Length: 499
Ligand code: SF4
Ligand code: SF4
Image (cartoon, rainbow, N blue to C red; front, side):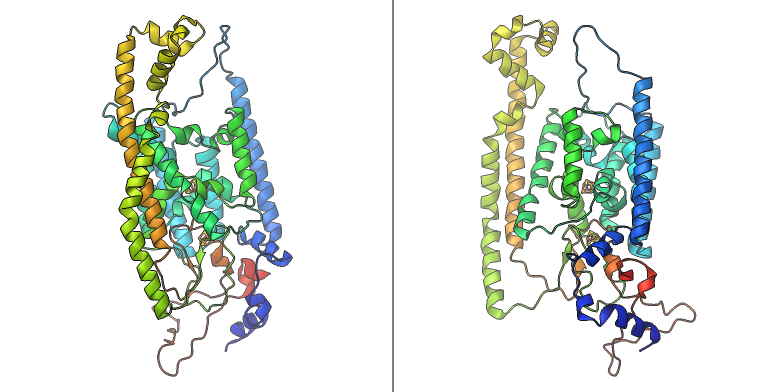
């Protein structure tokens, strides 16, 4: 064994207590904390101070902009409506945004897969937070673009610009090739949550799986409401856009702060339990051609990475099942497979019962029902919606007919949404009985945000490339007489191994 291996074995690997270190202890917590950027605690503090100063500067500039251009004051008591869709921007800016997005995702893929640099991913994510979050004010974003795509598919009169289509498609394409590098470093919503993780707790599997259904519901509702022209709920209830714009309804600012406070202990709560775009990214990532790996070479089963993921996205190795366990699994899998059509029907049926309630999200349906139930409101001069309708020259019959058509769309849409949710539940239940043989600790491709933290916990060094001059070929451990000698990193090389 060479000196380097002896050295690291003495310091990090051969001691059982080090091999089994968890994140719960004080030392490990500091170690985890330092892994936030793959450098020492001192550097982390410096980084946090820099980030905080930057945050203050941007906040100050945003507030001063608001003072230079105050909102017009009306003397009629008119309150300004909160816009739910973005104001139009110069097309050139939109193309610049797309170029920056593609550049950031390319660099993130390079840092995650090639350089294996947590530090690189971290600084890239800070750039994205500043650019896409504070400068571009969180719009246009890939998450919200789902609604533009849904509306344009169902309403030919709605025009969509090419940059918005690219914002929707490009992260999905990158994910299909490299995993969720968009979530790692390009999405401002993900990044702002990532930067506040302090002491993440591990959630029980049943809770994670149950809460994991919410993004499917949110995605379905967002598509339904957008496709019927009712509302863009993803934008309206984006918890961080108020922080990015330094101005929103008070409740939205509070919601954003609440998410960040929660995110200190439950890592990326919005990403894991709400983000509708995350559902699509998870599907793409499952089939990604390449994906970040924890170890750069062969896993030595040291378990150092076991608890390194704040998102519980590392799958542990599995034991081979016994024959009777296999049989039982197969039987249960078949039963749940056969039950999928039942789930689809039940989901569709249950949701269709809610179509009338959901359709009230459309302003025309809401207005028609309001006027049918309270015709006396026509005389109310302060009700702007009703007065606008009356002055438009539209008849009540016309409004009711329109509302009926919209309700019918909701009925069909609710069946589709419910069936989709039933399918998601059915697949989730069926998946409980799919056994996957795993030899090593691996990132779960669906849940992994490619943040790179776990890479810093692995003591194995990348295998030297034998094709390069001067590099000795690595002996094949499977050949007789060859003993697998782990190529270990030195503690000084960076990351939590320093501790
Ligand atoms: S899961 Fe959603 S919010 Fe989180 S980083 Fe990915 S796209 Fe952004
Ligand atoms: S790279 Fe993936 S598995 Fe590793 S810590 Fe980040 S999210 Fe978890």
